[in-house]
Length: 85
Image (cartoon, rainbow, N blue to C red; front, top):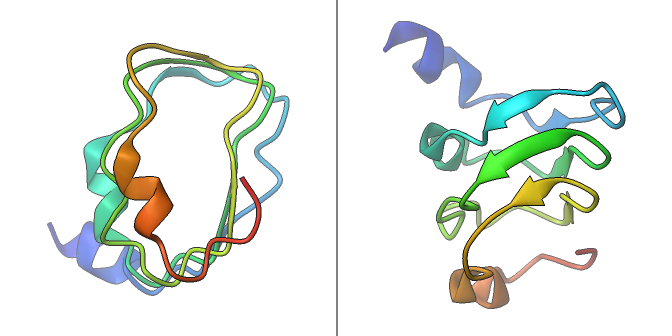
């Protein structure tokens, strides 16, 4: 838990595009409330997209070209600063 608490200060997850990352996007990512950018395009991520509604500072979310399953979360439409999806 201490690691996750420290990670709350991370603002950008960048340059993870096209690295063939596999697995799911963990729901704990929503605890990184200072995130402004998530760039995870062109990987092999699967499963549902977790609820990211706590990420009120998020401006850029790139999840394209993965293998996510299920509905697109409605909560993404409520993020006040999201300008790129």
